[in-house]
Length: 177
Image (cartoon, rainbow, N blue to C red; front, side, top):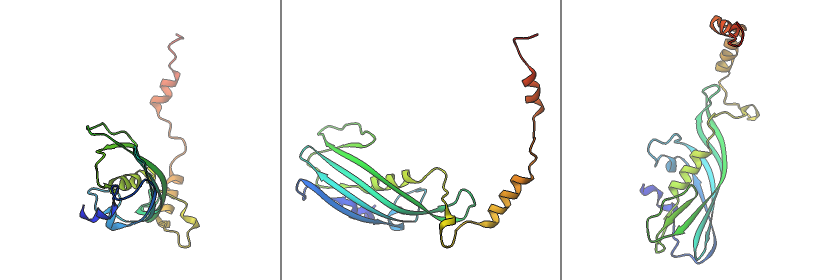
């Protein structure tokens, strides 16, 4: 994870107030995470670090694409993603249980590496069904042969595939004899 050192925010060296950071996320970043569902991408991330005396507030605003396979036609696509997430960092000398968007750190911490949070926010921004309207692209990435095959399979299936078991169960009415 030495390749993620540039994502360490020097909290001790910065005064209170708003501090902007910008990161370009690509394959070098994503490949640092073992078993990652995405290995390539092109994402621009703006990080706003609000340093306060009692806590830190990080706002992650990102937009870009990740390389994946289309769930509709299996073609490799650049899937658009975007998101805005917030992370609150509170101070505690004792180990506290972390919450969804709140973590606890020692007040004397010199820096916070936000790479893990950036990675998690990117992965969570990927939709479960990986498709998008690629017809608007100059050169659509869709595998037209696969789409034609799927369309022909749908039209060749018989319309009424009634299951005789369900038909008999529909006749069953426990209130009447």
